[in-house]
Length: 375
Image (cartoon, rainbow, N blue to C red; front, side, top):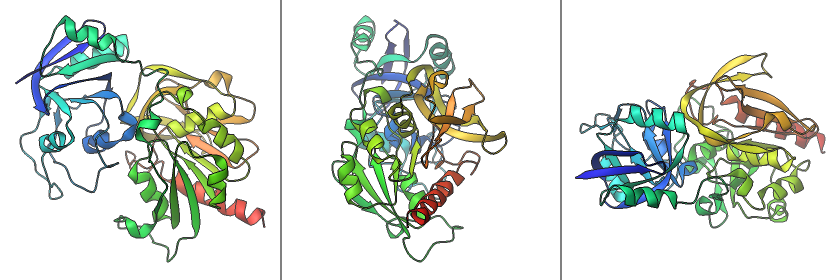
């Protein structure tokens, strides 16, 4: 069966349908990762987007239940040059197409993903419609009618509906970690679209994690008496997310704070910084970042974001700790007065393979120092 992708600028691509049938629209972006397609599919940060994988072959190691970053697929559509018809991996439990069908996700193969990626790089990420039903100008007009990502609060679509608690006993832990005998610290995590692996990292370090919906007021979070506040990743425009910046401001100075991705952006906004939309975003597992704090050491990082913090107008209360070696955009900050920091990239992922994981250890050390100083 044929499938069509139509972009808002009138560009049309055709290929073969893969996965569910129907029609879906969203912001068309590309990801340069050679692996990790299951994590991409289940990452809530991709909500409202159609993702183009630049790696030419996707699906060759199948799907398993352990690597999902959330309970379902959040993106709108998935585009590949070639979908592997052979699955070969001892951890595989099902094929990619079945996973897409189970989640009702429309996908395309047989498309010139190199040409599509070059088009997005040249013109910028744009709205598009993927369909197995029709093509042509009708789809282009539909693409133009999709709400732009700029100005969209996508967090309310992915955040948890109620408070949830996690501890190390609820996760299958990676071998090689020295597991503590008991949970020493209590982390309050604000769910802006959190990935499961973030919770795993905190649990592996002996933390009990209480996950709060994004709309939770500061008073309710503080009433749980946590030792630290974590701000998660998530989708959409950070400037359109309501209430979270105010919550951060009420807690800043009372608890150590650590933010990742969208959490990083909203943390900066809460202090008076500004954000802007990138032309085509940073999405992949090969992004070099300069770590100024470590004496200008380069870290290889995993990234997935379409907005960035404006480093030219950072408030006096904050300083840049990391920046991108691709385009010099802000990749990390810290508060000069209070125990709080954030990074734009994903330290829970493993492209380096573990270049950025020590951020979790730094957060734990910061909490222990704060607890010791408050006695």
